[in-house]
Length: 146
Image 1 (tube, rainbow, N blue to C red):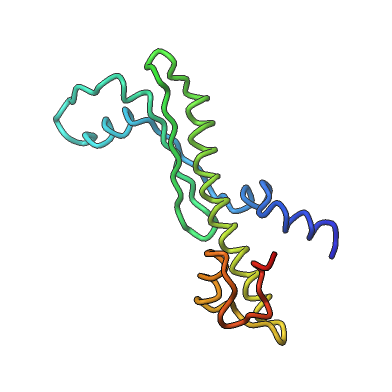
Image 2 (cartoon, rainbow, N blue to C red):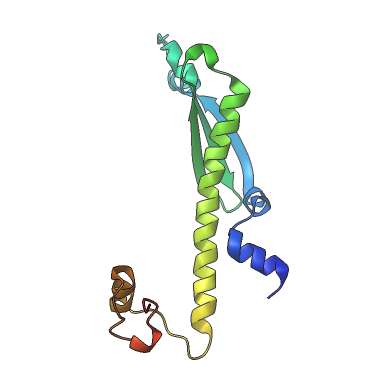
């Protein structure tokens, strides 16, 4: 196994792989969102100043899938635009990492199952592993033995 493959297996999805999936990013505050919802109307809403504390990030991935992130400041006086965007983006990209991690695990599982002589774990064996009891379907593959 190459060193790069070993790192991938132990760390999962890299930051570069997450960033490579990003097509574009948009940011707005809850205040912006409320104001925008009245755009084109004659209504002039009174928007709660606290809404400026909430920052949202919309990340569109290369395949068109959309992931959102959010951040909130504790006080309106602390509402820093750059900081809100930073944390909202980090929240969204953490979700992208989970999605890519799931895809990676699916690929690894397919690769493992495609090898000759390897079978998928039965539901009964999986329950036995979780319970710490011997596997009923494959007692020779018992991972719970002391």
